[in-house]
Amino acid sequence: MQPGKGQPVITFDAVSKQYPNGTTAVDNLSLEFPDGGITVLVGTSGCGKSTTLRMINRMVEPTAGTVSLDGKDISTVNAPELRRGIGYVIQHAGLFPHRTVLDNVATVPLLLGWSKKKARARAGELMELVGLPANYAKRYPYQLSGGQQQRVGVARALGADPPVLLMDEPFSAVDPVVRADLQAEFLRLQKELHKTIVFVTHDIDEAIKLGDKVAVFRTGGKLVQYDTPENLLAAPADEFVAGFIGHDRGIRRLSFVDAAALPLHDGPVLPDSAPVSKARAADGPWVLVTDAARKPLGWANVTALPQDGTLADATLTPLGHTFNLATDSARAALDAALLSPSGLAVGVDEEGAVAGVTDAAAITNGSSGGDSQ
Amino acid sequence: MTMITTAGEPLVRWYWIGDHLGELAHYTGIHLRLALLPVLFGLIISIPLGMLCHRFRWLYPPTLTAANVLYAVPSLALFMIFVRYTGLTEQTVMIPLTLYTLSVLVPNVVDGLASVPDPVRQAATAMGFGTVRRVVQVELPIAVPVVMAGVRVAAVSSISLVAVGQLIGQGGLGFYITRGLQLDFPTPIITATVLIVLLALATDAVLVLAQRLLTPWARTKGAKS
Image (cartoon, chains in turn red, orange):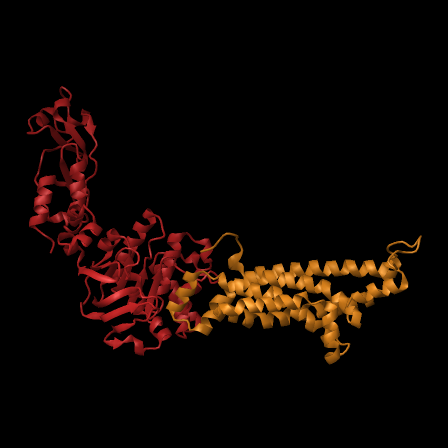
């Protein structure tokens, strides 16, 4: 995740939204959204997170306070013009069923008065950017899966290359596998585009995964905590936030520690060409067997080795999984340690060769010491 | 009753049809004009009226009641009222037929606009469509399948109703029905009736085809996004 330049792009100054029936959707909110970062608004339903989002493009007007974009009070800007400069993605994509995928994506450029040809060329680029095959251009939304529709929704929101993107539970209506795909794709896109993104979700896991900063709301439109995901997990502001995050925040925090920072040791590692006698000499009941290229094959139990021969003849217990030093987090390493029959997690380099091993205690100690802050 | 035919007279004398082909075609053209122009006028009235009813919900119940009351007034009575102003002309037939279409078309325009999914309407607003542009470019096109269902009903019922206009001498193919009754000769009656039914079927088929061409995006059923 790439934190942006940091200066505020969107500012809420003492903003409230009260409905005529007396309910308060947002209560005296002051908040700054940093440039080029993903800010996630999270909370239970009815906490005012969507209302907050919709005040940024004037879909909802505040009853008190000021919302500014780049220092300019947005209530002084013509609403349709303001909206053409702000991308918007919603839960069910809200694609225009009567327009082809290409024309859906070309919507905002056409509204801005681009020529049809130029708008469609731009739409073609955007389809490629979000990973939609070019032959989908002529299809209608009903011919797409939910995940594909949501990609079109994202492409459409990026139509006029707006600096700000508002996303209201965009990935909530798709199944978990597709959601994980879309989230990964979304983070990849953001690395490329550096938009200022405000993202609403009720899913704290999604908030922690995607957010550079997370704002936790409580029912009644109160902002409870506004912090980085790491700090949110390390130091929840109160019982409400702690409860909302759940009772595994210690483990989840490990997601923010790179596996490369973990202390590794060589461990009992032998190639499968080694004689069994050499494995017996190792201290401890388990030996990690690798191939000639040091790629791990499995664990050999020292007490169950054949009489003689090489380790290639030994029965191996599967590894569970390894962790990649370059791409995984300490959380993956801890999981690998918990699943490993020897209690040792196997770290591999980019080629998949064993770099070293570590255990659960070393992972948790190493993580709390060498914090990612 | 004069309908009861003279003994020995066959239901259809085919030579009569052969002798009157040109005339039949002429009256078929008139019949279509008298029946379908009212549907077009009805649509021109119903679209803005339906949009208003959609926007201001309180307007819908009284509008629908008014349209239904109009529909309940016998066509003969309406002809007699309009004859005073427009005489024995085609207008006198087409005005009541136009009013009749409203009881079908107005609710279908309202339902069609209501069929626009809420996320679609919101997305359009958030993309920066102004109200007018949103209605014209997004909401009305999405309402087309439901509106067309109403147009089909209105067209078929209008085609069948035109014949009554013969009471003031403007009934399209209805001409042959009164003529047959006067002459106690069933052939023109049956020919005209069959032609009217065929016209209704053909018109409906053309409308179905037109809708398919207009809304390729709604080709599959149950494809709501």
